[in-house]
Length: 428
Image (tube, rainbow, N blue to C red; front, side, top):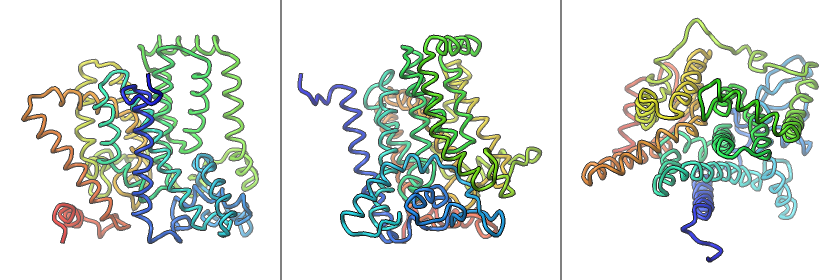
């Protein structure tokens, strides 16, 4: 058998991931080539996640990071956690080496560092999609297992937050939730210590990147069995692999230590609810449930209509008792309620409701079942269905390219959204 046999799922996943990495990197460069000198220091949330890394080079003072909230005359607090910086770090240090060799400024902001961030965003997209291919390939044909990640990238706002804002947390969290799903599926099939260790590390990083994504940890807790039996099985894992549990907890502690040290340095406290320090929080008595889904202000289904079909399919699957559908639906419902109660439920000048992006990892399962069913339709209906999917990809990519901050506020109306949507199909 040849070393590189494209018929083997492992090789298919590797080739798929490599090609997607190159494609996404080229898209990043083309989309942002005119902003190479401004991308990393743009005053947005991306800078908040990233600024820990230039501080390691001495570019910033730790007590006064540039994109942060003031605590007093001497100190500021970065409200963004260090998880994204951890994930970008290998590409950052590679960029520092390239900058040193080529004579560029080694400050975290010169062009080698911009290219490094493009590489980071593209890598985690590609790695997540390759892992997702392997998860889906256990149940579906290769055509379905490749189509689903491509649809998630092409027909959702994952595209925007990979290509146009590669420093935001979403593509990194997307990878982590797929990794979580991958480990969970394999652990349920064949429990192993290294997989359990991976689950601990992955869970720790998920919370460190974005605290609210702790909701995703319900999946490894309850996947694979009724909830009581699932919990009993998790206890058996802990008892069976105590060494790997201890190593996993140690690795998580190491990953979290820089964050805790920074919080203690900035505030004198070891744990800080940073958004609370910024005066932001939840309005539990005033949820915007319908707005999160259907508002012109970043309504999820309005900007990402593919997900309306996916959630409809998920509801049908949950009603029929399809395996794992109710668990995914429960996680999605919790995320929906959480964001509907956030003080800024539309998440500012975003492209669509970006709070759901990482959860596309789990929604890939009902999407795969939907695509698999479509492939079994009679010839005419099947072709029309995929033409429709192609139009969703075209519309999403066009809207990503047309987006101009901020699509929010009083001036952003249904009429304004309609004008831009018409330009997506009828440029001119």
